[in-house]
Image (cartoon, rainbow over all chains, first blue to last red; front, side, top):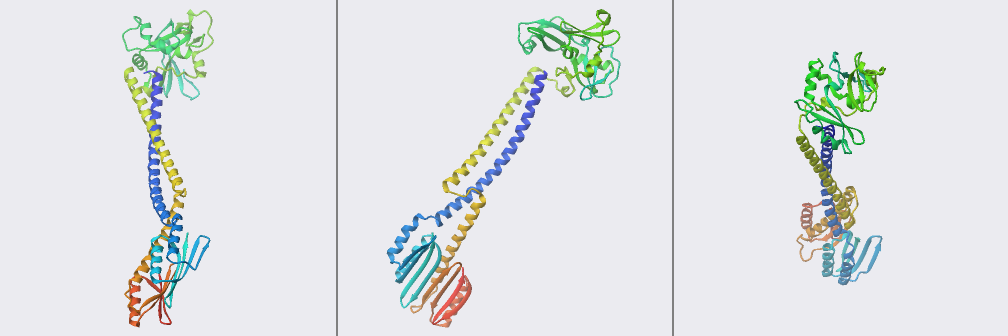
Length: 129
Length: 314
């Protein structure tokens, strides 16, 4: 066997070992990265659904319009990201309708206050937008 | 006759009259007595092309044996061929008393002194001399001029070439050309396959990064898992709190009230739910309290006029 062939074989063996080690290391890293990505994807999916549920501002206008259609609020205020609605003289039926909408709309209710005084019901609700 | 090169390994010039013993790992340079050399003019450019014709160059000259060849380009179209039977050489060296376990590499005088157009004295009787590029082993008396330089002195300073004809490292590799070509091909395929696999793996890693970036971009997500976890915890807390509020109102609303009984107020802030209810009797109040305690921790109870007030923690 010629010297050239001997050196070539030695070089190829060296390259084989080098690439084999590099491949093993790369595949291990890929496995780790795949696990990290799967976890990231899972967390992202959960986060996306939670964001959709609790941070979707698009739905608010429509829902507030529905609430206002049931009973005209005495006062409505926007303090930073908190939207405050004050109703006075709400009937029992209207109160139930308003509460149903509030609880089915995934609003982040920061404060809720209902008072019944001589058949007059007042409602104060603070929603974080 | 031992000398040290830069790595302090002794180099011995070997003639058939060599009588010394080796005591440490050494390299040997063979005198022309051990191989055949022939200078030929061929219309070829490279030595590797000429090497294909080596067997025919020595056709009818060599005795029976397993010969190997080496080719050195001397000048344009001029090549020097050498033929050697390494097994015979090893046998001969062993007969001469050389311990082959201590021999690292064997070179020929042709490969090591080809460039020197000079004569070198070996001992009192013989010398090696270049005859048109071919290194020959000649009696001193055949040479006209007196030779000052000794082969050992030259070897002391010399760095040997890579044109060895024997290496201890490759001693056990006894394979023919077809087998060595097969090994070369297999190794080349193996290296290529490994390289392609490495590329594929790197591509998959890049794809993961791309997928992650596209997810981040599409849903406007924070870039790190830590930030995602923090935001997710915050939203989960809201989700849990709002569900608790709904459940609490539904649960409290399910308590059986008579026609005259009713809730007069309800107040929710942070994690506390406070409500007051008008109830007919103290027994009913106790019943109501028991009902609430089943599911919630009561923080405070009290009475305002006829209203029974309860504050619970969600």
